[in-house]
Amino acid sequence: MRRLFDSIEHIDLNDHKYVDFFFKFVNIVCLTIHLAIAAFSFVSGAKILGYFNIGSIVFYLFGFWLIKSKNYTLLFVLTEFEIIAHSYIVSLLFPVSLGFYLYLIPLVPLSFFCFYFARTKRIIEKGTLASLIAAIAYNYFYNLTDSEKAVYTDILTDEEADVIHVINSFLIFILLIIMCIIVITILYNYIGVISNENDLLNDEASHDPLTGLNNRRLLDIEMDKKLHLYDMNNTHFSILMCDIDDFKKVNDTYGHDEGDKVLVDVSNIIKECTRPGDFLCRWGGEEFLIILMNASTKEASLVAYRIKSAVEAHVFNLEEADIHCTITIGVAAAQKGMDKESMYELADSRMYKGKQTGKNKVVFE
Image 1 (cartoon, helix red, strand yellow):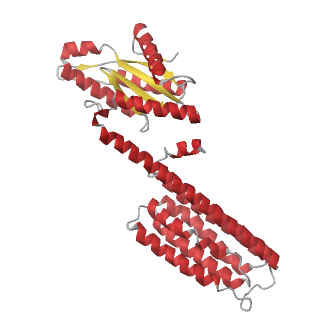
Image 2: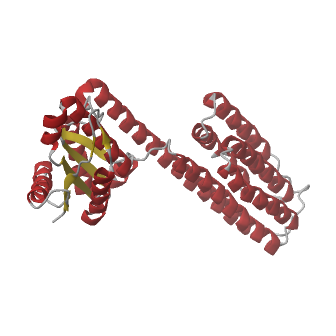
Image 3: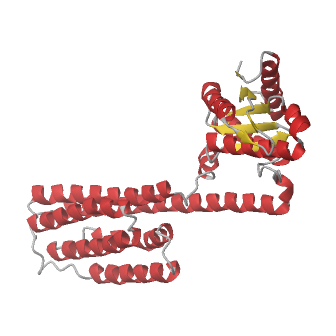
């Protein structure tokens, strides 16, 4: 359970892929339930209910297009009314309660989640209104079933009706459990966001003023987190130790201001060659250190070669001349029993090996 929470903490719920996943999950659950009900209806002879569910199935298939079009709010509103209409039809058709009106209960948390994920304005007001509509419908359908007015009076025995009611009630509890997990996910996500924001506010010196990259103070904090995740979840990661070759000659020939331009250009190249979630740090002087999450030695080496090739091909436009530079990179992957200092030393020794054997190299063993 601890590992699950550690993983949840690093999910960005503002990412569109998670928003799409949430609505697709809800849509698939509703579609699956209606497919099962449609099959039951035609097998048992309740054709009116079966035809209604065919319409519901068509609607939920249409729901995938609404998700693709980012019409999340419209999808939820139509879903709520479809669930209400379905509960109403079942209450009219059968002489005893089958528990379908219970599906109105999850509409309360679902309405707030959907409006939140859809980034709808006035979430509280709209979520409350949707919940009240569901509550009114629930109480109305609770008393609507009438054995004398029912259409299908001889399809189900009392025992079969009880089984369907139990199945529906268990499905409701499962849905509510899933929604609670979503709440925990949101809380862990924002606890992580607030913690990160506080770290930045408490110490503005955590970033290099020239390149905008993280500095070594923040690097040590990040490495501790990554090593903890590795120990807890076996979440692999690697680091790259990068050093611009013959950078002293650039400073001596063109001056430190021009050297700063080279540093900024190299830092931008590193940003372009890495993923948004990778941790980039100016180690000091002309050295950079990169943390690559979920990367083995081989995968990290591919990134290192990409950086090396990009630096080698780049033209550095200085005031006095256009020049070329190269970079040497040492690669080290996390291993059991390693601390951050051991990883730094391993990557640095491999980078130094590359320097001594010709420069403009990637060394990973």
